[in-house]
Amino acid sequence: MKNIIFLLTLSPLVWLGCKGDGADSVREIRGGGDGPNSSLIRNPVTADLPLDTNKLARITYEKDTYNFGEVLEGTIVEHTFKFTNTGKVPLTILNARSSCGCTIPEWPKEQISPGQSGVITAKFNTEGKGQEQHKWIYVTANTYPNETKVLLEGVVKPN
Image 1 (cartoon, one colour):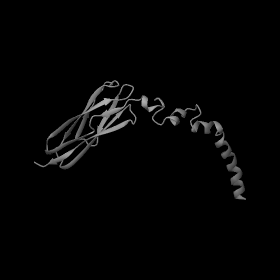
Image 2 (cartoon, helix red, strand yellow):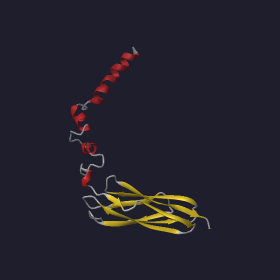
Image 3 (tube, helix red, strand yellow):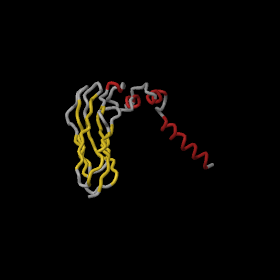
Image 4 (cartoon, helix red, strand yellow):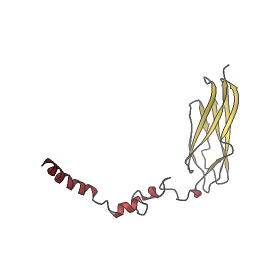
């Protein structure tokens, strides 16, 4: 008896909860609708960017790894990573962050036109560091993929 009462109570809730989940919603999920999220579903990058990722900015590094060899602890290692915008629209670097507070990246704040080049400078303070080091710089930009990375690596010897 309790099961019948439970089912009779639950049935209207299920019916009301599913109301409007017909073919239109399925069409939106598959990318054929014009619902509020349909552009996100068709393009996982973002709703505002074109579907063709070849029309985006692209950051191409001359070299994405720099091996500074062996240095004494306390040395400031500085390197500039050269890059070119090989995409079709201006490149905007939104942020550059390091994997450690001992490494400070600097990047151009202005847009880089297609075909133009720029540099990202990384300064690594080896004070208190020892042994083999790998310091990643993560660059967030209006590219696909939206995050790229470069690497400073080498060995820090104690004084």
